[in-house]
Length: 285
Image (cartoon, rainbow, N blue to C red; front, side, top):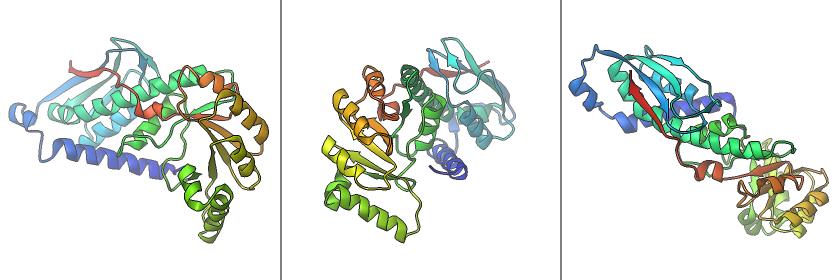
């Protein structure tokens, strides 16, 4: 996984790029009708039930726009919310509050939706050893905050990007000439380049599970698009030799059954690519 420093740098890039995109040469709506010395106060209102996420990120946005803005949080990231809850108050320069408003709302609405969906999965998996993972199926440019939201919702992060973990999927295997060749070439590459990266290998059937097991040094096997019966067989075959992860179209309706097959992880792209933003609004007080 990426380091804390790398993650913090990603957040700074997201904020600076988003402000560049949204504000450009200036927020002319505010500049035109609000005096530069005007101050004000606003509150973030919740308009539907779910898990709130992005409060700490909102603080970073407000601080980036104007370090003199004051945020008085009434809740914490990960709290359950319902219609009418006030998440925080922000006070200070009226122009600064308005400049930050849209980015704060866009980020928090997206993060809260992801946290809510993740919480639903993690709740379903309680009582099993299985944990829910995200994927790289994220919105380009804002992966860091989407993966942060998964953590807030009770899930765990898969690899952040292509550079922090090896994942040999079907296309890698086919282009490399087979599973064993793909694994061996990868291990040689890592050794030659002095890289310490974990290797995950995707399996499409039970025969591939057996071939992967025959190769040493695999950290996790991705049991992809297996039915329940074959997933149980795969877990038995692997028998603790490495970690196990189920993936491929797993939904809230099927997640518990896959967990009961004994896998260590379930990964779902739906945590980040198929959510509807939580309804939030920022209103002047």
